[in-house]
Amino acid sequence: MFGTSRRCGRPPLTHGRHSSDGFLVPTVDDRSDHAPRTPPALETGQSGGPACDPAPRGRGARRSRGSGALRATPSGLDSAQCSQTVSVQPGSTYTLSAWVQGSYVYLGESGATAQAATTWTPSASTWQKLSLTFTTSSTATSATVFLHGWYGQPAFLADDVSLVGPSGGGSTTPGVPAVPAGLTAGAPTTTTVPLSWTAVTGATGYTVYRDGTRVASVTSTSTTVTGLTASTAYSFQVSATNAAGESARSSAVSATTASGSTTPPAGGLPTHALVGYLHASFANGAGYMRMADVPDSWDIIDLAFGEPTSATSGEIHFSLCPQTECADVESVADFKAAIAAKRAAGKKVLLSVGGANGQVQLTTTAARDAFVSSVSSIIDTYGLDGVDIDFEGHSLSLNTGDPDFKNPTTPVIVNLISALKTLKAKYGAGFVLTMAPETFFVQNGYQYYGSGPWGGQNPRCGAYLPVIYALRNDLTLLHVQDYNSGSIMGLDNQYHSMGGADFHIAMTDMLLTGFPVAGNTANMFPALRPDQVAIGLPASSYAGNGYTAPSEVTKTLDCLTKGTGCGSYRTHGTWPGLRGLMTWSINWDHYGNDEFAKSFDAYWP
Image (cartoon, rainbow, N blue to C red):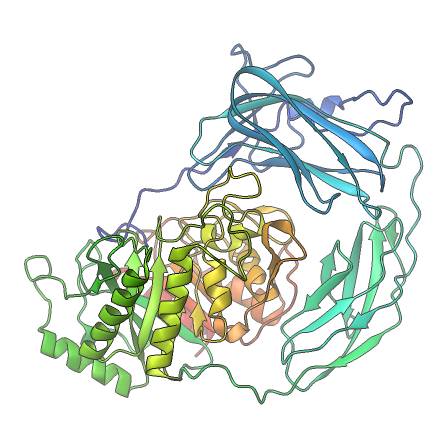
C-alpha cells in the first residue's frame, strides 16, 4: 500500500509525459475538397494532453508537415494520452488519420458517437498510417480526438493528424441556443435527484441550477444532483450553452428528497472519522507503536497486514511484528487487551488484508472458503470489528469478455464478493467493511474497464468497481488511495495529478457523483453516500508519493463539504456528510509529530 515501508512501499512512480509539438491536432475543413489542414500554431505545442513535449530534433521525429512530431512516454499506470476537442456537424461522416511510430499506439475519437471509435497498431518500427472513419450522432457538435500508447511501453511518436469531413461551423458564428424544454425530475433518494431534459440544437453543454445556484455543467441531457438533505424540497432549472453564450433558464421543476428513515449499515462511527493504518506485523523507518499507545484521534485502526500463505491459497495469516525486528513489541495478551480497550472507547479495530506485498487471488471456491475461514479466525482471536480490503498489484484483474461491472463473471471478482458477503452475514449489522483501492482500480474506470472491447487494455483497469458495486449496501467506508497514482481523468474530462487539493476534489467528486464506466453513459457506476467515503492521503512526505500539505487538505474539505475554495474544478454537489480522511499511516504520522491527526482534529473538533 503505502509509502516507503518494507512491507508496504514501492518505488516512486514515473508518470508518462505527453508531448504536444507535432500533435497536429485535427481541424475539420470547410473547403469543398475536404482536404485536411492543420493550423501552424498546433505544431508549436499549443495543444495536446498534459505535459506534452516535442520530439527531439535530428531523430526522425518529423514525418512531413509542421515543425515537429508528438512524443509521449507511457508509465506503468499512465497510457500517455493526448487529446483535443474539435467542432463537428451532427449526422456527418469523418475520416481521422495519423502517422505513428512505436509499440501499441492508439488513435481514436470519443464524444461524437455512441461508443468510442479506435484503431491501433501493435508495432510500427517506421512511420505507419492509422486511419478510421466514423459517423457522428444526430446531436453531436464536438468530438474528442486522442492518441495514446500503452502502460509500460516505450515512447511513441505521432505526426500529421488530420480529420477530414464537414466543418463544425465554418465561418458561421452560432447563436445562443434555445431554452431547454422538458425538464423532469426522476425518483429522488435521501441525498440525490436525477434530472433529464430535451436536447437543444446547437448546444454544446448544459448548466443545472438548484434554487438559483449553479451546481453542475454537463454535456449530456441528464444528470443527478447529489449532496442534498433528506426530506427537503428543491427547485431546479437548466440552461443550454455554446460558444456564443448561455440561454435563459428553463421553467423550474420541484422535487423533494426522500426521508432519512433508511439508515446506513451500522458501524458506530462518528459523523467525521479519522482512519489510519498501524504497522502491527512489521517494522520500518517509522518505528513500531504499541496498540495501547495509539492516540485517541484515530477512530478506525487498521492492522497492517493480514497476508496470504500464497497468492492463490486464500488462507490469510496475521501475527505481531517479531521481537527481532520490533524490540518494543508487546505480548499477544497485551495487544488483545489494548484492542479491547480501544473498542470499549468506541474505536473500531480492523484486519487489513493485502497491502503492496500481499497479493490475494481467490481463483477458486476453495480459496474463497479458506479466505472466509482464516479471516474469521483472526477476527475472533483478536476481537476485531471487521475487515479492510487493501488488494493491490495483481490481486484483482478482469478476464477478457467480462465487460459488465454489475454482473461480473471473473472468478477472483465473484469469489471475493461472495466471501465478503459471507463474512457480513456471519457477523451481522455491526460488521465494519472498508476498502482501500488505488485510483487505477476505481476512478480510472471512467476511461477504461478491463481489457476493453478490443482486448488490448490492462485487465486491471477499474477492477474494483464490481466489488464496490456488489457490496454497496454493506460497505461501511471506501477510502481510495489518492497517492502513488498516475494522472487520472476527472468528470471534467481533464487530467488531474496528485499532491494538491485539485486531485482530491476531482477524485472524490467522481465517487459522490457517479460516472459512466469506460465512457458508456448506459453503464453508470452509481454515486456512493457521503458517509461511505473518506479521502486517502499519505501522512507525510516519507509515507508515499503525493503528500498533500495541511493547507491543501483544508481546501479540499472546504470545497467538498462547504462548496468554497474549489478552484477551477466544479464539483457536482456539496457533501457536508463526507465521512472523513484516511492515511498511511498512524506510525508515519507519529514520526511527523502527529501533524495529520492534529489537522483533522482542528478541522472537525
